Length: 379
Image 1: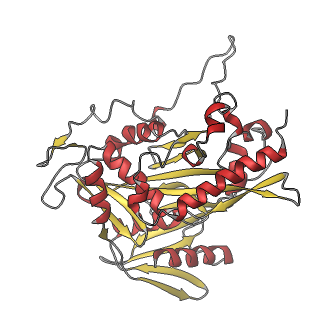
Image 2 (image 1 turned 120 degrees about the vertical axis):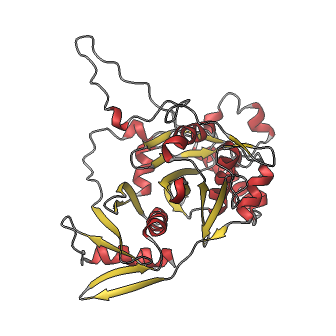
Image 3 (image 1 turned 30 degrees about the vertical axis):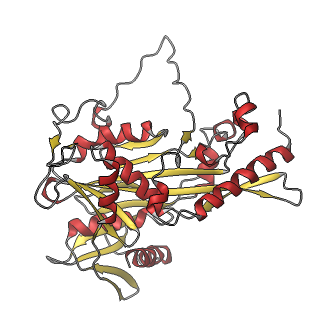
């Protein structure tokens, strides 16, 4: 049964108007810390497929299974108590009395948790996104990549008298017309610390046609303030107060270094004036904020495996109703994969290049475009 196009349009346009007016006033991080700013409702997951009685299930490969939510390596680590009285996940020290801090490069921020490994923090990151209303689409502790499915922020829908009465029965009719997804990159940092970044992706449903009876999904810019909000919520998950997490965001430490574009015989590379550890993290963050998705990464080889991401097709397939219209046997070919190589060029210089399967610098136009995008992001 189809809903009236007029009622659908009226509902979504009213919601969109309120959402835009709300975002217009969010000029500072303080605006995003209100408890009613985010109320996500993720795409429901389908029930598991039943195995026929005459077949047996294949054994799972335990190399790719995350630890149980209540376990880390050797059990849940005991939290440390800070001088301020917090029982925090990080290990306090002279530089970080709260056991963690925020670093930033432009409007990009990431959390550094002292004295904890990615393996120890991974179960809590799983809990964090689930507690905030998200379904995990990618949960890969071996590569440190965690992504959520597309979800709707229900806080953006007007809570008027009509919704409070009729909405209890037909709440599905209400939509903010927007969907959000978040990617978490977890990296092993220096001095037994863990670096955690959160990247926002967004889509918006726009009414089309003269009579506004149809719609299409369009990509929206990432929201750095929303990323900061979830970093703050994560710090609170790790034991800080709201005031402490806001202060760490305010006191974010700059972590920028000069980036030089080098061109030689048709090949473009980047030189970062910093160590491999820091360059590896910054390149991952830069890739995460382009239209290239990191499918895998190998720190030992210094390789990011990336492909061009079509957010609209992904939302259609993975969204609220997409699973009804897209079969698992889709013939659409995945995007071409590229290899972004990060390698030390000296003690304080790191080179970044797109390479082919043999490790040689890729001189194709697509490869050079990726280098140019990275150069713009890193500067």
